[in-house]
Length: 469
Image 1 (tube, helix red, strand yellow):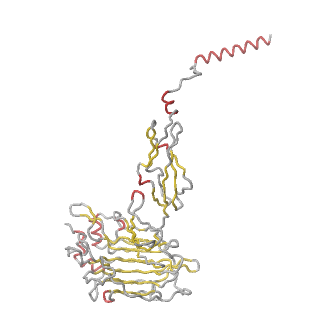
Image 2: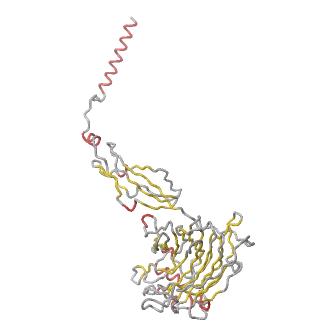
Image 3: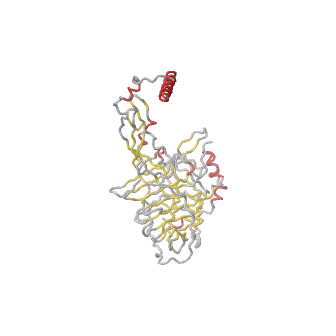
């Protein structure tokens, strides 16, 4: 009897289950394939991966910056169309925090699993630097310091006042300087002599303030008057014919890592370097893009300028803005041309063999360079450069494992005023700070007016920014 009851219960439950299933959707045990889906899955043609923007195949980016590695890539499939969003990458050891050049491999798969061609993108992660903190000042005797240098004969072709060190284990040079007021009076063509600097005529005298080093070869690093973006009275902006603002430059001689190339702002290269010379040794010159007006420096700007070796065999220029000029001339020029307020500048690291690992010389220079006149006797000129105030100048040195600043004074420097010392007025070098004030006045016995007097008394300086009105 129990067996009969148990069997009845089982039959009842089976009927209940079947009844419930009959009320729900029926599943076809042999479904027909979706023809569209089948088309994708049976596809045997691989997708195509390409660089829609070829300039993105090799890029340079700053260390620790944000960067979309897929920039410039495009993937197309014969059936699915644009599948760029499906691109995958083999990153290898790519690390945005570690400087170096990396090869990233890209590919893409379609729905059928067909793999595309592979593309390689080269990404160079550039080491970034901050403006150096000021080292403590060392005033004691340096053991085994090199003897005073001997000044060579003057090099022809420019008016320059050069202060340079002995060759010793110096790692860099820094100075705080207030930029001078130029009065340029020699041009390639007719110019407006009511202006201290006429941006609409090509000047043949060119003021500069720079530093540099010499381990195996000479480097010049600093500020030179260069072309700039200027406005006319109608509000149109264009590049000036002549030099009009102090802008950073770096010149070096090298047989490695030339870094030659043009501007490429889209890929993070905001500077250009040109090199010339036979064999492996090249003379290279670097300049920052004139579109960045925050790196235009003007008379009265007070700057901390540094050239130093961040790693063996290399140098770098750094400029820290201490105070923007309040001179009417400079305020007027910046306002009229819509230039940005001056900002700190850091150049790329550039090669300079021997620096940081052997004895080297450093220098600071005030100059009037003359166009196409290098190595020739200077041309007579009435161009002048008012007082440049070197508030201090210090060499960098590692002493007992600590980096110090050491006064760039008469105990470790030699001075050249070329071609004739009377073309310069200087205060002499301060023994404690290494500071000095320098004015250049070719074929004049002196230049009495200071930078403040030039900016307030000379109507040409005050009216420069009204040049087109």
